[in-house]
Length: 235
Image 1 (cartoon, helix red, strand yellow):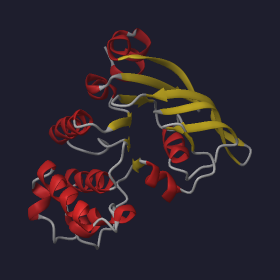
Image 2 (cartoon, helix red, strand yellow):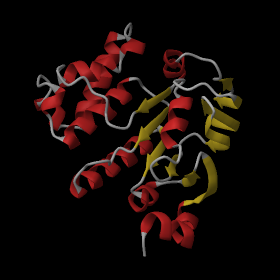
Image 3 (cartoon, one colour):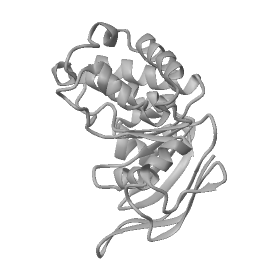
């Protein structure tokens, strides 16, 4: 579904991504592990078209993405839910959600149906629909951010640190929702520092350090790997 071949990204003289080669197959939930500054967000921004590769190729469902505008990449089926939520705080929850449907703005019936599905996934957002998004709790704002991304009808959903700053109970609920989204047919690429919770729902995982992919494996192999446990999970 998604394939990266020797992708480099530079910010001036600094190489943020170095020979990244990875695959995400249709229907998978793949976790990208790494500390702050490892390059996870740079990779996501490159897949979204916000960064341009200086070398290598990115293909999605057989189509080369290099050089495409971010809007064209969304239209192709790749949608990012960015770290920090990036909501419009003064706009209502409903308005924030409907912004995600812009790429499908001509399909009004389909957007209404999708909006209903999002409210079924996050029932609390129905009663908050007219409230400013900035007035919601952190967990509710993350629901809006994920819901907005889902309004774009992604085939590949990229989630960048969705558990960041959330209470443990909300984190558990969030990972259950991510697992549900995947089980309903959306392929997920999840960047997370909460390694144990992420690996519990993953198909496979990659470990990223200093702009490079340094390890990969399936869920059981990564959970049982001593280096992974020491670095990201703990004893």
